[in-house]
Structure formats: C-alpha cells, structure tokens
Length: 152
Image (cartoon, rainbow, N blue to C red; front, side):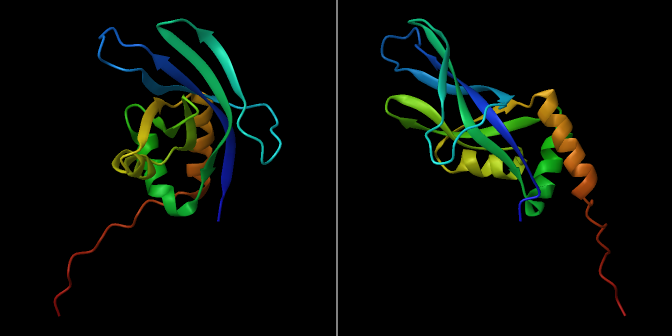
C-alpha cells in the first residue's frame, strides 16, 4: 500500500570521453520536483537544458517517487546517511539514456545497482529530504532491541 508519492524530473547527462576508443558516457546527475502535469499513458517529456559536442544535459519528467511501508528501513538508512541519495535506474531508448524508476530507499538502490542495469545515486535535494523526513516521522518505527536467548 503506497503511503506517499512525489512527482520528480531527472537531469540526465551525456558526455563524450576524451579517449578516442571510449564511447559516450551517460549518467543521472540531478533530481528536481516536477511541477508539470503529464497525461497518463504519454511518454515522459524530455527538455534539452544544454547541448554541445562534449556534453549534453536534458530533463526527463514524468517519474514519481513512491513510499511504501515495507521499505521504511531502507528510507531511514538512506535518510541517516552522510549524503542522502535518490537512486535512479535508467535504460537506453532510441539512442538516449532514459530514467525508468527512482527511489529514496537505500535497500532498493542497492537492488538497482546489483541488477546489472544502469543506475546512479544522485544527491537528494533539500525539498525531497524534507518530504522524506516528514514521512519517516509519521510512519517509521525503529526496530525493537532483540532480546538474548532466555534459558529456563
């Protein structure tokens, strides 16, 4: 059961490495809250932010951060990290890296990296961090200390 969601847009980067045998390098490099309204079932809007032969930046909107109670430990672990991240899974589509999914769960982020697909951890913006903090205050219960084995 989803307990919260926030629409986001992902800033993607294409870089041309200086090495002549290396291909293009792609990465998710930023996250911003998405204020636009997108009709359901339409492809995510893509907006070019800057373009040059060496480096392109573009904004892909239409993604959503979703919060589920079974991921609370992962949200808390990420929130308490020295630098909280938004984890972005992306795939190549029509010659461009397109974000597919994003999460603020450290556990889900680890699953993204372990999946063998392309994923990046992007610094979490303050607005998303405040939103996650409010969610954790309302829904996170720290685990109870485990008791040792009782002998009878």
